[in-house]
Length: 422
Image (cartoon, rainbow, N blue to C red):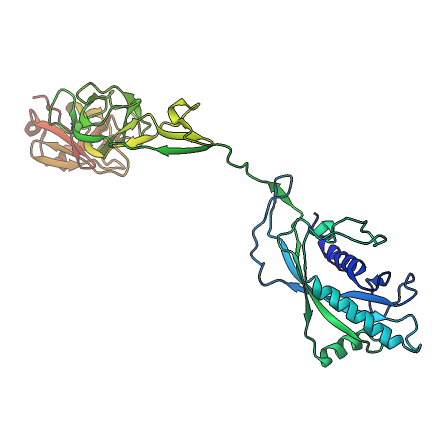
C-alpha cells in the first residue's frame, strides 16, 4: 500500500477491534482529540487519540521487500511505534453514575486490548454494523496486511505527572480517567519503487577441472634458443596442455590471436604485429586456451549436462607468462658530412630505433653516443631513422669507416650485422 495509509490504518484497526470484541455491544468508539466531542457521539463512548509516534529501534535497518507487482522500494520502510491516549466519556459527565459507567467502559476496552494484544491478518470481524468493516472482513486494516510485523498492543506505564502534562497541554479539558496504549510496529513504505530482479528459474552448476596451459620454452622461429625478437618475426612456443576449443597467443597487452598447436604442443605464432603498443624492451607472452565447460543445469533431479544447454560459456585458462626481448632492427648505416647547419654524423635507418622517453644509444665499434632529443647538430630522431654526431662518438670519418653499428633502445640491443661503408 502507499506509504501514507498505514498510520490511519492502525487507528482504524484499533477501532474495529474494540467495536467487534468489547463486551458492551453498540458502544461508540471515536478517534478524536479528548477535548473534542464528535457530532455523532450521543452517549457513552471510548475515544482513541494518536498522541505520539517514534521510530522503532528494532526495525530501523529492515531491508526493502518487493510488492505483489515485483517492485522494490528504493528506501527501507519507516517503522514507527505509536502511542495512543485511551479515554472514556459519558454522555453527561455530571449525571449520577456517569463516572462509574465511564470506568466500566475503560475496563472493558483495556481488557479487550489485553486479550487481543497481537492482531494477525487471520482475525475476522464477528459482529454486524462495525464501521468500515463488514462481517467476515479482516480486523486488521487493508493498509497493514502487507507489512512484515504484526500489530502488538501493550499498556504503557505512565506517571501521574506525565498524564497531568498531557491534559494541561490540551488546555480546554479537565483531567479525565485514561491510559496510554503502545502499538508497534507500523511500517510506512517508500513510495518510489524500482523493478525487482527476476528470480532464478533455472539453476546451473559449473565445474571446470582442468590442467592450466604451461609454456616450456619460446624462441624466435628458425633460431632455437634465441629470445630476442623483432617486429615481423614469428615465435615458436613449446608447451603443455595448450589444446582446447580454441588456443590463442597474446603479445603484451594486444588482443589475443588464434593459433593452431600441433600434436606435440608446439605453437608457431603469426608475425609480431607492427603495433605502436609494442616498443623495444621486455615483451610479455602468454597462451590462452578455451575449453568445453562441464557441469549440470536445470531444475529437479540431476539436470542436463552443460554441453547440452543452449550457448554454454567457454571458460578461458591462462598460462604462465614468459618474456622475450623485443629489439630494434638496423637495416643500414652511413657517415654524412657536415652541411646545411648539421654536423658530421652517423645516420642509422631501420625499425623501432627511437621511442620518446626511452634512452637510445648508438655504438660504432667501441665508441658509444646517445641520440639527443631535441637534436643538436643532427636531424630529429624517428623510429625509422636516428643520427649521432661523430664528435660525440669521438671518431673521425676515416676511423668510423668499416666499423660495425649497433643500436640500444630501452636496454634492448639490435642483433643485425651492419657496418659503415669503407
